[in-house]
Image 1 (cartoon, rainbow, N blue to C red):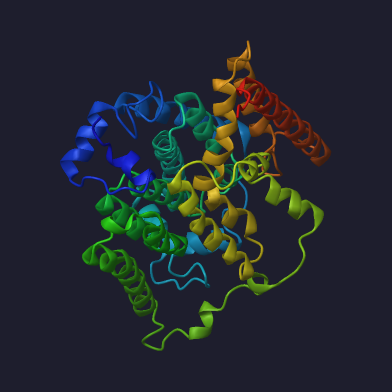
Image 2: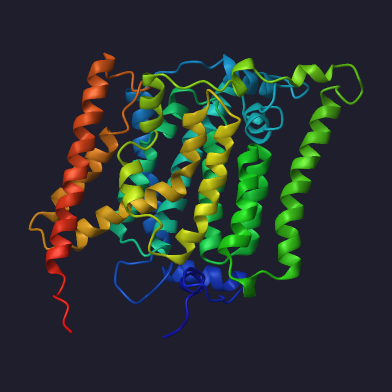
Length: 412
């Protein structure tokens, strides 16, 4: 059987390099393995269909499920002013998140329209990359599609749709693409995704350690190792110097104190009850389903947990932004949780397709939070989340029990 580069990476073996190989793999519709129909393979037409579905869901949520709030306040206000004037020196940590504001500024007309367009384009593309990444991890089409759809309605995405001035959408795309390219052993596209991600938000620097942990030793040549560290750091350093120069900080016309973060940024307070609910709603019951399947069946998934540890470490400093920080865990949480959908599809349950649809719907409902302005009052949202969480856990348990019953009895 021919060795596929993605499957070789996942199993910890070196993969064959070459841009032509990647094009051939995509054109042939093979992501990770050809050993089982519907597991690990995709076609460009399939990805386009997934993108169309996700784009439709995002547009419906934007127009009918949410309303715009906070477009000119707090960190959104910082990004807006950055788009209006490249000379504006925003407060830390927003100062050097320049890519999305620059693209929004280049958009014809009001920068707000540019921010909105970037969000509405980046989120479906990130979902497509997540879908392909899940297929590389050997999830079936149904499980991978459920994961992509749940990403499109997750707490982090809904926050972006209510406040599209946030820069996280482009970061989601960079992170999903980086996970995909790293999983299939494509160094150059991975590095490009990291560099672009760093220009948008410093969180993408956390992908650099991921490269060294998740890539087999034979693939980590000296040149690649140097580039994996040097290029993202050089890009970030360049942004810092250029921004400080253009903003007048290096010239002394603008005081360095103008970069001082908001007081709440480093305030270490216990979150109130509604704050904890907000954190849970980032992924809802997917948190619990993912935890159940830790550390994951694939070697790449287990190694990629370093990215999650580094994302969580940011909570030691950041305050008031916990939900959006945790939302960057989606490449880890969603594929792990979708193993439950995979079990449903592989079970002998009579109505398993219907049960998968109900499980997906319950997972989506468990992520309802305050930004779902069509669901008032708050007690209604709490009730929906509680019922949905219990329902999803019950459905997942049903498939697990069926799988256990199918296991042959061990013999001596």
